[in-house]
Length: 301
Image 1 (cartoon, rainbow, N blue to C red):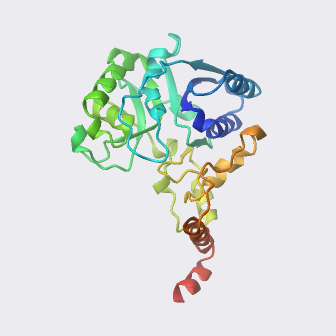
Image 2 (image 1 turned 90 degrees about the vertical axis):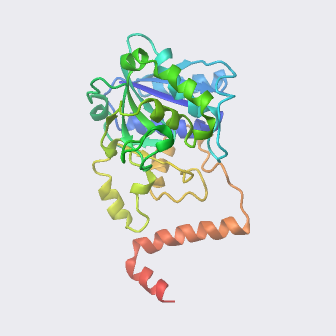
């Protein structure tokens, strides 16, 4: 299986966690990881190569120009960098013998067998993907409900992608429509691929809103039975102190399997009175979800 990931120096810890989850749950598979990485040293590259080799797999690194995407629109958020645009370049960079690959965002943990996804027949479309929670985007030419996909997990038919020049069309859209890029390259891909993508079951890209904050952890674990990929979308990342996704325990399960030097638990560890209060509210809410009786008594107060 060919897996593609893209990241910069800010995401080394999540990348290790993603790889740990991928390999731990897909033992026996022959996996090649294709990575576009910027801002990391040759030592860090070699450490990643050795880590992947420990799982009898390989990782290949690809380079883009230092100024690639620097002039592309980046909406102000806490987590987006020019690296979000790297994924559109993979089909042009990967070797000829790679006819398809799975692209994975770095805020993902793999909890099942990826072979189920990899063997999906994509027919005549450049990609297969999972519907996002965005209902429609008329500004992108998407007027029908359930017609906008999340680009965090993509099964890419490389030949069809190249044949239809999806990379070139995306770059053109990005440069000419910066005001429409609410979700950066994801919007560009959706605009270019209107009615030209195949829908995947949500188990291949289970996102934040699917994980209710009002049910018990036992119920959440039960819901994971058929899930293959958990995607920590929005600002609620496991490595954020105020992250509200209760499935973050999955991230930290694989966090324990990465090199100790990269076990940076939070990247925003900055306490003040407001953040402490918010942190306690989040954790208290999770406790109350576990014990409905206690929840009822609390609300009566």
